[in-house]
Length: 283
Ligand code: SAM
Image (cartoon, rainbow, N blue to C red; front, side, top):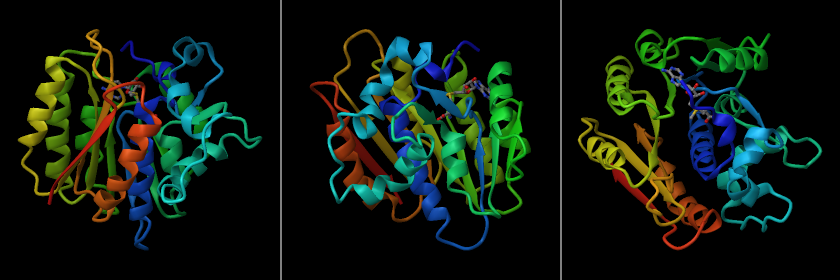
């Protein structure tokens, strides 16, 4: 396990993923009954954008820096409500108004829980697990588990609330991870068929990503929303140039919201020619 999210926290892919995560949780909150979030690849929860890892890549400057950085342009009025929950979660980490700390998925999820909602944050990397546990120490709404995500998708589902979101955000560093992801997603869906599942995947000019898209097209589910954000043309080095999200059982209104949000994000987070978005729904 070599992947460390600290190098990438707050980049364009995080903005895409976390903005959609916040929208999904806002929809879950619309009903009074409690829900549960299971975050299968949680990371450390909070990232220091001034730390050596973040400074080394500077990726966040072309991500959250374009929305809340010192020189970032104002956010248009029609976009403000769509980003409000997400950006409020980021602002809450930076009380003095200077962007330094970036919340990862478990902290964003935590910021949107009501008193009866629960979060289970799963992380396998030993150091990251410790950091995550420290982050949520004494928080009775959050449980941190140092278990394998693929095991978690079997042992933690269905949640007792019978409503909620499962976020699957693997690093895709091992050759078996695409296979593991689809096996895990299928196992999760067998146990929690009406749950919302949100899977992140990288968009790179590689065979494994094209394979990923083909596999998503073959997924045997009735309701699927694909949200893709591409920030530039592939440059031949196989680096990440886009971010994909596959949502099974997405909230009904999410598609219309992303129809407005994605073109804005593609323009604001553009890194050159070829910035675009794709939204595809099976309902
Ligand atoms: N979801 C986080 C966020 O949005 O802030 C970022 C997660 S990062 C992309 C992927 C994380 O998965 C890493 O922290 C890594 O240590 C962890 N990980 C890798 N393989 C895992 C596994 N089999 N089970 C649980 N966690 C795993």
